[in-house]
Length: 113
Picture 1: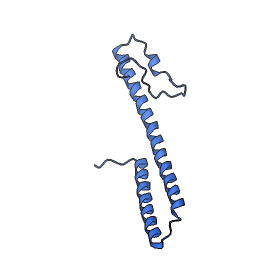
Picture 2 (picture 1 turned 30 degrees about the vertical axis):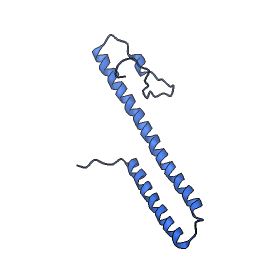
Picture 3 (picture 1 turned 90 degrees about the horizontal axis):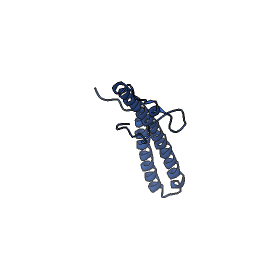
Protein backbone atom coordinates (compact mmCIF):
# COMPACT_ATOMS: atom_id res chain seq x y z
CA UNK A 1 0.00 0.00 0.00
CA UNK A 2 1.22 3.46 -0.89
CA UNK A 3 2.13 5.64 2.13
CA UNK A 4 -0.25 8.53 2.74
CA UNK A 5 1.19 12.01 2.15
CA UNK A 6 0.72 14.32 5.16
CA UNK A 7 -1.93 16.96 4.53
CA UNK A 8 0.37 19.85 5.38
CA UNK A 9 2.99 18.67 2.89
CA UNK A 10 0.26 18.27 0.26
CA UNK A 11 -0.88 21.87 0.86
CA UNK A 12 2.68 23.21 0.55
CA UNK A 13 3.22 21.38 -2.74
CA UNK A 14 -0.21 22.41 -4.07
CA UNK A 15 0.27 26.09 -3.23
CA UNK A 16 3.77 26.05 -4.75
CA UNK A 17 2.50 24.49 -7.99
CA UNK A 18 -0.47 26.85 -8.22
CA UNK A 19 1.72 29.88 -7.49
CA UNK A 20 4.25 28.85 -10.11
CA UNK A 21 1.47 28.31 -12.64
CA UNK A 22 -0.07 31.66 -11.84
CA UNK A 23 3.29 33.42 -12.20
CA UNK A 24 3.82 31.71 -15.57
CA UNK A 25 0.37 32.71 -16.77
CA UNK A 26 0.91 36.29 -15.53
CA UNK A 27 4.23 36.50 -17.38
CA UNK A 28 2.56 35.28 -20.55
CA UNK A 29 -0.24 37.85 -20.25
CA UNK A 30 2.17 40.67 -19.43
CA UNK A 31 4.22 39.77 -22.51
CA UNK A 32 1.11 39.51 -24.69
CA UNK A 33 -0.26 42.87 -23.52
CA UNK A 34 3.16 44.59 -23.26
CA UNK A 35 2.28 45.83 -19.77
CA UNK A 36 4.57 45.11 -16.82
CA UNK A 37 2.63 47.07 -14.19
CA UNK A 38 0.94 43.98 -12.64
CA UNK A 39 4.34 42.57 -11.59
CA UNK A 40 4.44 45.01 -8.65
CA UNK A 41 1.50 43.50 -6.81
CA UNK A 42 1.55 39.97 -8.24
CA UNK A 43 5.12 39.38 -7.11
CA UNK A 44 4.52 40.68 -3.60
CA UNK A 45 1.29 38.71 -3.25
CA UNK A 46 2.83 35.43 -4.36
CA UNK A 47 5.87 35.88 -2.10
CA UNK A 48 3.60 36.68 0.86
CA UNK A 49 1.44 33.62 0.16
CA UNK A 50 4.41 31.28 -0.16
CA UNK A 51 6.08 32.72 2.94
CA UNK A 52 2.92 32.18 4.98
CA UNK A 53 2.43 28.60 3.78
CA UNK A 54 6.06 27.58 4.22
CA UNK A 55 6.30 29.32 7.61
CA UNK A 56 3.20 27.53 8.86
CA UNK A 57 4.50 24.21 7.59
CA UNK A 58 7.87 24.75 9.27
CA UNK A 59 6.22 25.72 12.56
CA UNK A 60 4.08 22.58 12.46
CA UNK A 61 7.10 20.39 11.70
CA UNK A 62 9.00 22.00 14.58
CA UNK A 63 6.17 21.29 17.03
CA UNK A 64 5.91 17.71 15.79
CA UNK A 65 9.67 17.23 16.24
CA UNK A 66 9.50 18.63 19.78
CA UNK A 67 6.79 16.13 20.61
CA UNK A 68 8.75 13.22 19.12
CA UNK A 69 11.88 14.23 21.05
CA UNK A 70 9.91 14.42 24.30
CA UNK A 71 8.31 11.01 23.70
CA UNK A 72 11.72 9.51 22.88
CA UNK A 73 13.15 11.00 26.05
CA UNK A 74 10.33 9.53 28.15
CA UNK A 75 10.92 6.11 26.57
CA UNK A 76 14.67 6.25 27.25
CA UNK A 77 14.15 7.37 30.86
CA UNK A 78 11.65 4.51 31.38
CA UNK A 79 14.18 2.02 30.02
CA UNK A 80 16.91 3.46 32.26
CA UNK A 81 14.56 3.27 35.24
CA UNK A 82 14.05 -0.44 34.55
CA UNK A 83 17.78 -1.01 34.11
CA UNK A 84 18.83 1.09 37.13
CA UNK A 85 15.91 1.07 39.60
CA UNK A 86 17.96 2.69 42.41
CA UNK A 87 19.00 5.70 40.31
CA UNK A 88 17.00 8.94 40.65
CA UNK A 89 16.09 9.94 37.09
CA UNK A 90 13.34 12.40 37.92
CA UNK A 91 15.48 15.39 36.92
CA UNK A 92 15.81 14.12 33.36
CA UNK A 93 12.16 14.86 32.62
CA UNK A 94 12.22 18.33 34.19
CA UNK A 95 10.84 21.30 32.33
CA UNK A 96 13.95 23.00 30.95
CA UNK A 97 12.36 26.19 29.61
CA UNK A 98 9.51 26.67 32.10
CA UNK A 99 6.92 26.32 29.35
CA UNK A 100 5.19 23.32 30.90
CA UNK A 101 6.43 21.06 28.13
CA UNK A 102 9.87 19.52 27.94
CA UNK A 103 10.99 19.22 24.35
CA UNK A 104 14.42 17.79 24.90
CA UNK A 105 17.66 19.62 25.30
CA UNK A 106 21.25 18.63 24.86
CA UNK A 107 22.46 19.35 28.36
CA UNK A 108 22.17 15.76 29.56
CA UNK A 109 25.37 13.85 30.21
CA UNK A 110 23.76 10.40 30.03
CA UNK A 111 24.40 8.78 26.66
CA UNK A 112 21.30 8.73 24.46
CA UNK A 113 19.43 11.49 26.30
